Length: 375
Image (cartoon, rainbow, N blue to C red; front, side):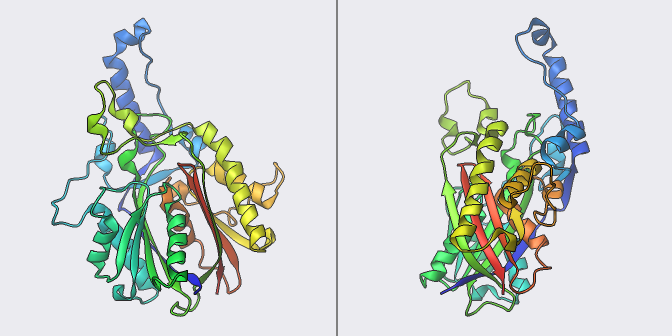
């Protein structure tokens, strides 16, 4: 059985925060902190908190704004974090709710009913709880028979989810699988850290993966996939159920997102570029036949350099943004959902026979490539 991508779906929060808004809040917090610790700063026992700027944020990342579920608390210098009210156990969780919204968008695009789906995979970086699985909650909310499970491979969760769905279809376990990536990335971000407070946004995506025998006209054949992982501490999030057992003196900040950006850049770019090149060679698709690369939306410089390496462009030649479209400027880094947003928004111009690839990379390290061709 051959698996195809039948449709993608997208849910976007109504609220967005611009770089300018974010920086105003950060600088107000930083000024307040410095004033409260003026004596220690003068004595040299603590370092003053630096200020940020919209120009610094854009130069460092290529980000101009980000969508968030909880805007006002993030911009409050006395809070500087999202505040998402806890829901009763009988109510749908916020993660399941946004996953359902994205799933319904995908189903509607191809006239599918939820009862046509056999399985649900929720593949994302930040799961709301350990159990019951968010995927089972999504399955229940949509009224889907069959089975469901969660998986987490950080920023590569969606591509790993596509390959998992393809395997379920190839093995005859399912004919139609929803892969949902609800990402509330603002919840694990330290908004008091100048070097990372701007990185993430919130969103949800869904991908309908189906057997070609039931797929709609114009679906995307999966020509090949390649997955890779390599252990690294350079991107880390320590938040988890054992935090309450941590020794006294460990602050909350070390449980949030941290990264060594320079090392990530140096190590991940060649890894991903080589993986893409190797997989294209493995399935016999020349690089010049790739019309577009929907890359993970983490950092504009990383995407540009990966594209240059894959396309074998000289250092001075610019990458055509049509070849590697960017949604990072509007959405920021949305972890596993980023490459799927790029695909959702920049694939309508493909004609039958056109080939492209979806690529993700992130913490773990983890990386995934899915080569697709319009039918």
